[in-house]
Length: 174
Image (tube, rainbow, N blue to C red):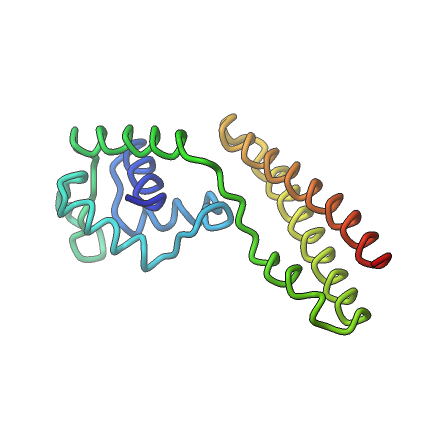
């Protein structure tokens, strides 16, 4: 059970697609910004979901290319999709930020070098917030659920910047 399963099943639930088209859909929606997902994992997971009976494949004649497998969701897949939706909605929400390992180790460095790292974190969070806002503006015509994720990311980045300001002030005073 993984969030990748949920992403793939959700995409195929919308319309049957080849593994390549699923990967393009993941890229187009920038899902790797919000969940751990990679191109190789998509192909592996599509095959696994097919083998488990959650997806079914139909071979479609290619125009200029070789025949390709197009995947659609099965009833078993729909049930699994709903199970995953409930499972993830029922779980505690972990907020895992890789930069926290930098924060926890700052006291092991010279204070000026540590403050330089805090400044780099601020720059990267600011750049990420700007990129998120640009994506939101460029994809303003997406459905509400997509807009909601952009807004969530916007709020999180700005909350992180406020938190970092407070932390830096306290760190300077310590």
